[in-house]
Image 1 (cartoon, helix red, strand yellow):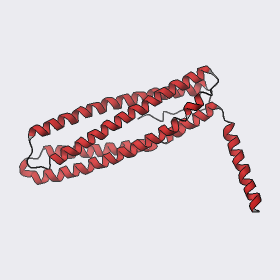
Image 2 (cartoon, one colour; image 1 turned 135 degrees about the horizontal axis):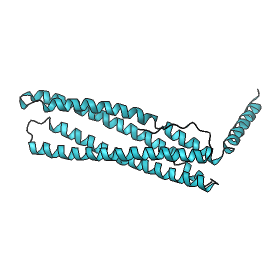
Image 3 (spheres, helix red, strand yellow; image 1 turned 90 degrees about the vertical axis):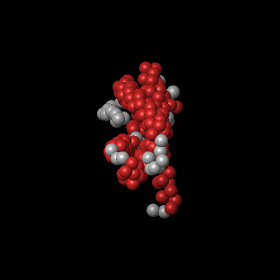
Length: 223
């Protein structure tokens, strides 16, 4: 095959690809973006499990530290350093988790301009409601991630404090109270995120059904 014919074949292939994409309905284009957004959250689900395992390990070490007295200060220091390492790993996983959600959002927001092209007003209304819910879900996640990151920083500060031989009990107590307050925020924000996830799944199902898309629907974003 000559270079000229080869280039012509590439051009034809590209034109066929563009034609195939442009022939899709607005509903189908939205579907593709929605499913790709969910695929991009696969790392998030994996990281959630890894973070949960780190949480369990850290809790076990914290309980061990609490059971020690100052005569075992060397062991307290050792355990505290182990806990700091676990917290550092959590921080890294939280960063990776956020990147996964950001990639998902970047894909998802592309549907906004396509929604305006929908001709059926009922379908458009379903799509707009779905879009708003998912936008709120992303916002809730960022609040959750920010609060979680703050709590991890507080954990690291606590374990570094416990490595100091001269330490006031009042200082530790105040730090624990602030940490527990953040833990309560995390629980609340996580509940909000999960609720919005469930609402999004329902809204997406409604959009697919209204669009008459032949889709095998699964609740991909259940967390």
